[in-house]
Figure (tube, rainbow, N blue to C red):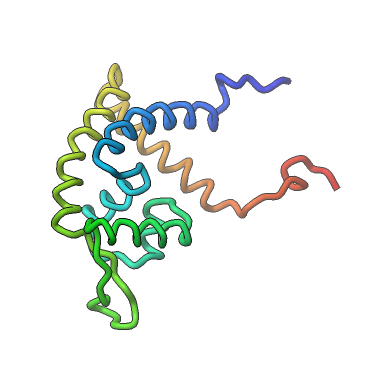
Length: 155
């Protein structure tokens, strides 16, 4: 049976995500930041003082990319790096007052985009959709990385 792209979950998720990202990225560019920058600021605004590894997990940004991104945000005055209060050997990434202000200004834009994307869904349906996507993510997190042989069954 051939794959119907319009019914293929990864395609549907990607299509929705790309459309939302493109619209939000246009706003972010005017503020001089990228979508990954926004994710870092939003994650820190939600829970400030995260270590790089925690932040990488929370934002789904690869750690070496995140390290460069945090350096750029730090140079722009949007985040700081300090010694972790619980472990002096560790570095905690914190949102700065300027980063907090920028994130606070952009949050309503992000929320409005989400509201637009969920138009026509009841609050219950929207919550169910989010819960289902969390479950899909958790399911995939439990699966080890696969290679081409595993996927195709070739040997």
